[in-house]
Image 1 (cartoon, helix red, strand yellow):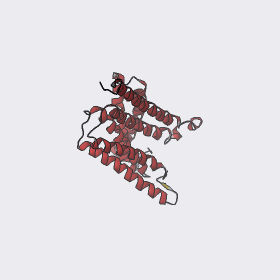
Image 2 (spheres, rainbow, N blue to C red; image 1 turned 45 degrees about the vertical axis):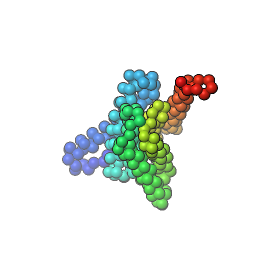
Image 3 (cartoon, rainbow, N blue to C red; image 1 turned 120 degrees about the horizontal axis):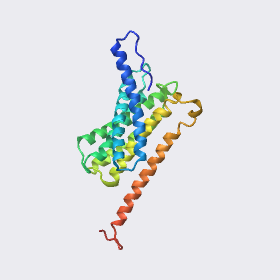
Image 4 (tube, rainbow, N blue to C red; image 1 turned 180 degrees about the vertical axis):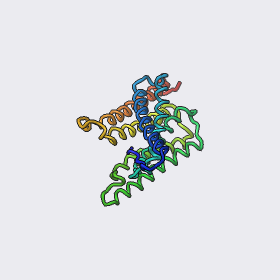
Length: 247
């Protein structure tokens, strides 16, 4: 997120509010990254995992909301940051609700999630076309390709929301996978925003290695999705007796 520029003639309260918003955004993002890392390291389902997860959810929602709301009003509007903020907020909220709501429960909330994911895809496609049509090939300093990631993530999320609605909810391994991939991708977006989006904050010697945190997060995502799928397969096999009978 860029530094907020406030006119020197603005009231003191405006300067104080701008400073508060900026520090709250940075602080929430920092806490989100640390708590997300902690949630990966502690045993899943433990008290420590739940605590780290709750801290992650609250901090990420604050960080994403501020980023999405403030980005259009920066000296140079950052429309890509609006999309990133909305998408991150949506991913965290839908991931949290996947494990907090009763299995198989759906309602107007789920239709709202589907609408949000679809809007992210549509807005990303529109902004990508604007970037492609510009003489520089960029929009607000971002190349057209930058919006492709948002379109892919938003499309996958929308398909998942539609599947949940059509099946009248999800349970078991599918419910856990929904929670896992959405929370991890939100973590991935936040990590990219810091390590790659703010690379100037790091020593020059480290800048060539700032892609590693994002790569590690993707690796953990693949590992845990495989773990969840393998566990579900083993549970299904245990319910079957020789000859195909089911216990």
